[in-house]
Length: 306
Image (cartoon, rainbow, N blue to C red; front, top):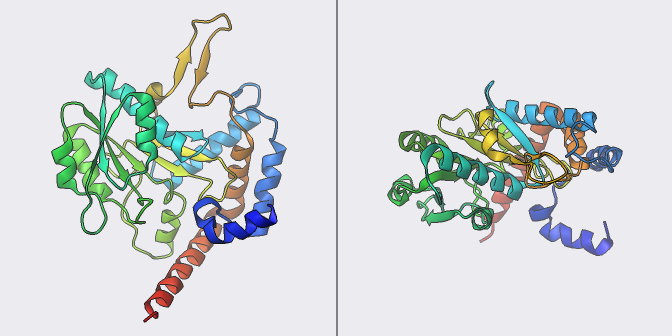
């Protein structure tokens, strides 16, 4: 890292850089470079990459409440995970519900990439106001749904305020109305389970919550993998048929992709695998302890300011 960039990262880093120790960074870098040239699109050409990817997905499913039917995809980051969640819900709504231009209903605190993705996908987004505690208001979500609504979107936690939407309530609401529910755990996915393990009250938010259809969790945030690395997890892997892109109307033959990308960097996959196996639950719990201790010291310091 250049010296000027390092100085700026000390001020702005929490938004862009997730660093624990130099030793862990070295593990990530060395694993990345081992797979610097491989292309994760070529699963048959690079079976070792496919194996690492599959194991990372399985670790994510195990951590985030997925059952035997769950499946997942390794993506380039939270935006691509969210894009693929919307694409999957769109195709599901078209095939299963007959909705031509599906609509997403969500709280105003949901990530901007929803609107970005919806713009590409020809979907509409309705954002509703928050409760006084900065969480999604169930009543306002319900008032916003109509015959074109296919998806509800909730945050765990929301990026602007750092609080969890009431996922259990929204899940029950999604089941009642037959709607897809995506949980954006890009920030919390690889931190909240370990914060819970060390004794802090974390509300239910993952695939184990009835009604949750999909969940996104970034490995390059509190998973401490190299960028870009994220997971899109599905409660039912059968729905991957709505996610993937298949094409054969060209001279080259069949083309199949589970992501928006064609060629994909294998380095982030190797980095994620190495970091996750190096840290294990004990390592991630220790990181969670450091983060929560830092948070409490920050709060105490702020409260002492007159």
